[in-house]
Amino acid sequence: MKYFIGNWKMFGIPKSINILNKINSFYTKDKNRSKYKVVFTPPYTLIQSYSRYFKKKKINIGSQNCYQKDKFSSNTAAVSPYMLRTVGAKYTLVGHSDNRSEGDNDTILKNKVELALRNKLKVVFCIGENKIQKRNKKTLSVLKRQLTKVLDKKFNKNNIIVAYEPIWSIGTGKIPKLNELNKTVLHIKKILKKIFRKKSPPLLYGGSVDGKNAGIFKEIKEIDGFLIGGASKSSKKFIDIIKNYYR
Ligand code: PEP
Image 1 (tube, rainbow, N blue to C red):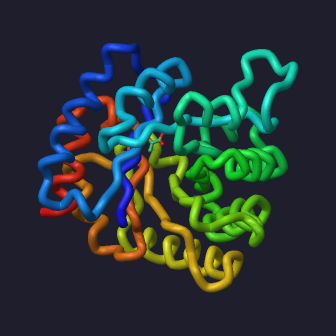
Image 2: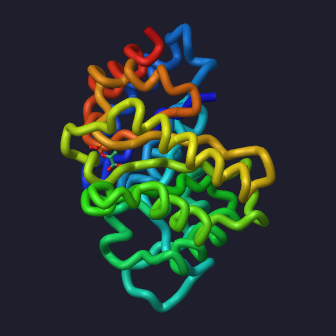
């Protein structure tokens, strides 16, 4: 099963549901639909209404983050995994580089993953090196640390998806060279198999994926789908990614 996950970041108002409606119509008619799942992570403000609307349809709704406490707490503006689950979220991103840069460290991220899983959310755990780490050839060691400090063998691997998102690629139009990406992906899968005893959770790629480059990634069989930022705000661009991937 492949995943096409759209991350809206700080985008969207109630009527933006039209974008998802068009994608839902495409999906229900697509001959390849049994091969993939579509998930969208709109901002917190839209999760309840979108989850209700898509309950019996094909698009799954998730959140972009969650707070590292289980149920209720005195943290202003925080939203817990429990609260997200009660308004219909099925997935949550954890560890997006935007949130890491705002202070989410390995200890916080581990709490988030644990609590999200406990509240029956599927976790999309994001990892990735920055430009300097890449330049200093630290990519593989950075990724190893990010994975092993947070993912625990006791976590249910069936509810975890890992998204490799090189930070230098997010929103820049730059994507990794195919041979480098292949090497990195194999490295990540090897670490995941070690943590989870042979079976690795699905591994997505994220960073400047669009309709033009989507087909290139087909060559790397270990990539189980995509986390898509900018291009997920347009139904046409998002659908183009799916079409070009299966062409
Ligand atoms: C992201 O922020 O998760 C992302 C992948 O963004 P973009 O597709 O715009 O690079």
